[in-house]
Image (cartoon, rainbow, N blue to C red; front, side, top):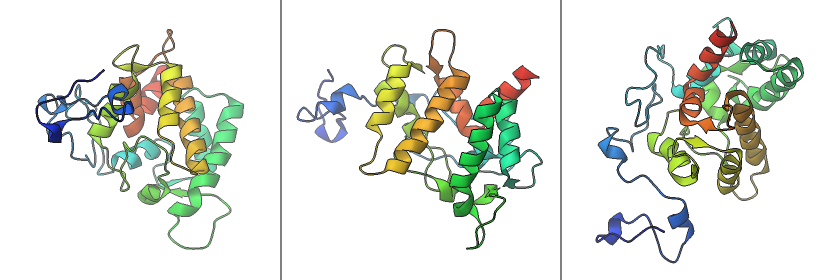
Length: 232
């Protein structure tokens, strides 16, 4: 159990709220990462990668845009369902999952990213407006503008990675998903569950661990690029 510090204003554990002791916050993060409280617009940084993914060119895009841009196969700024399908196949998903993901993802995200009010039957996702599709009941590692929040990313592991400090088991992942649920946000629950379960499926190791580097890589899309190269 966490112990109380001399300065109550700096304490992260409240004795009357036991959950604050169970889900700990890394209080020494600033020693390893400059300004961990500051959201990064173009780099997915953590205590091991204070400058983000080595060699990755952001092309001026936000971290969330970089995540989605992998599926923009012709790089025209728009992701159509067939491109989502191609991207899913490129990272190793089977035909059925890729087809289902292409329909469901574009159906769910397309309208909120459109530049006008009239829906498009082609279900395009506009990369420049992807921040408008951010859902609730998640880790909040993306802020509402698509920037990357280092402190929120680190909380994924400081709070829930019990077996291994830099990886999540399936049980720990499910605990995190339940803990992040917002009241009555049923769509957010579904989106978060689907995203994280899919990530676990494609990125877990032989021991069933989802490592922090895989999680960080999915935020800026570098994991997708690595998986595609590995398959090639």
